[in-house]
Length: 138
Image: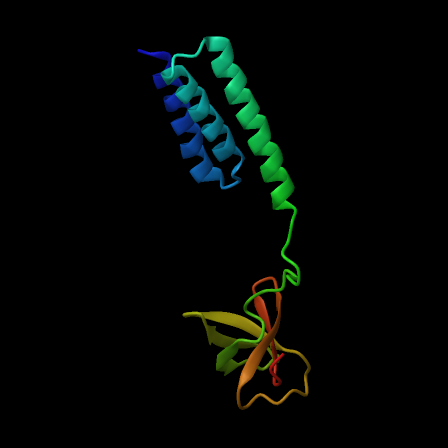
């Protein structure tokens, strides 16, 4: 088999592993191996194939590392669930309850013990898998 076939097969293996891990670093290395395969397909020598693959892998990893730390301005990392309306299924004697939200039942707690439990309730925060509810829309 030609050298470019090995480059592309190795790149495909790394892209397949990337689908399992989800970190994007293996994707960058898979792309780097594909660049090495393209160099082999163009007839460049083995040292040039490895050099181009190495440069692409290092550059891709550095760019990915730098861009992963950036956040758009104004993004606080706050959950998109906060402020959403929930439907109360039942309240328990200990003050906690079950609510229907996003197609499933969740455990819920009121933000305070004297909070009204009728009318519309909204998600104020999340504590693990427990929703903290409020009477006022956040």
